[in-house]
Amino acid sequence: MKKILGLVALTLSAATMASPGSQWLTVDNQILAKIRPNLNKSVQTVFTGEGASVVKLSAQEIEKLSHVIHHDLHRCGGFIQHSSEAEAIEAITSQGEMHFAKRAIFADYTIDQQGVAAPMVSQVAEKTIRDMILKLSDFNTRFYKSETGVKSSEFIRDTWANLAKKRNDVKVELYNHKSWPQASIIMTITGSEKPEEIVIVGGHADSIAGMFGGNGRAPGADDNASGIATITEVIRILMNSDFKPKRTIQFMGYAAEEVGLLGSKEIAQSYKQKSQKVIGVMQLDMTLKKGTVDKDIVMMADYTNGAQNEFLGRLIDEYVKVSWGYSRCGYGCSDHASWTANGFPASIPFESTMEDINRSIHTAKDTLESAGGDAKHAAKFAKLATAFVVELAN
Ligand code: BES
Ligand code: ZN
Image (cartoon, rainbow, N blue to C red; front, side, top):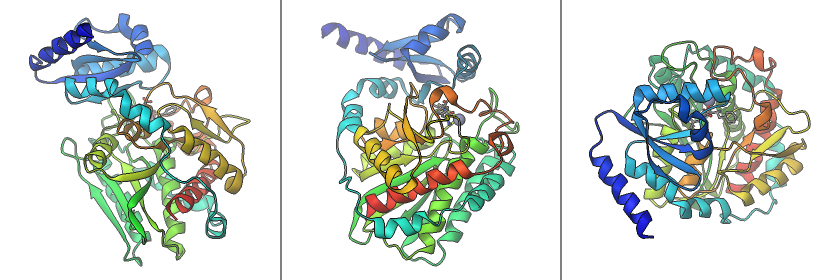
């Protein structure tokens, strides 16, 4: 015990001596072991927890690290960026919160809304999803620091607001972030009986290509125009029906996911800080390309809530009637991990297993064409998300 406290004290005092521009990342230990030989000596490991470590490095070194992971390991990411050493250590030591988010039962998972949900599920249309994917991938890039990244978030806000224009129980807002220009988008349908209980469906609004992001072409059709277009289809159907949920439903488009889950982290932290009662979170990130022959919808079993995942499986059987199964990201691969880390129940129904992922993501080749040319796969996720919000919020 003494030893551990000593280590923490040592690392905290090191934090106060940090040079300006330092960043802290939490990295999976297995990944860190593999990439360590290719990293600069100035990249210091300042804390090592059971499954992950905290490394301190400069912004340039983060880009190098991201490149090393993609290039040498042929996989994505595997790190989360933090603004201080204390926050990074907290992220890997606050296992209590994480354990709770994964194991606790947050809602009644009885499926009993068939009369309301089934007619709405049957309205899911491939064409509207496809059109929205094309509009989003027309932005040159949706990179969180780019001008078109700012514009694309405003476009999502306008699209959602337009769908909601006849409703006075619905509001659509930009959620501004202090440290970068791209806003997140939040639509709120206020519940009629238990408004304090919140059901969330979200996906990231930004895109990225190459090592530096910047202004290079990043259509991000699969990653993640598909998730935003899937959510937009659920919104279209909800706004076309006279469904008034008992609980509050929120749809979210997160800024800056591709650079360390930044937007969702700020939002989930503020929900925790305000003790908001979130009873379920679904993340839609990559719904376009069917990659696994015998599994249409794949639930990532790590960084997610087990009971809610099992509920999603039953919703698929009841409403979507396609095959499903489990896989693992191996790291906090998308915004659901921000919710889990802050003690909320989250799931990510995904387009394929991890082994079969779309290899064009994060390149200029992530287009609708390269993912098969239609949004039939995404339509399955729109059905699932529609069933999820109706069953959980009503
Ligand atoms: N859509 C990806 C996550 C993903 C990729 C999930 C492949 C499953 C299979 C997401 O947008 C992304 O790229 N995430 C980053 C991680 C983040 C912490 C920077 C990644 O995986 O590199
Ligand atoms: Zn991505």
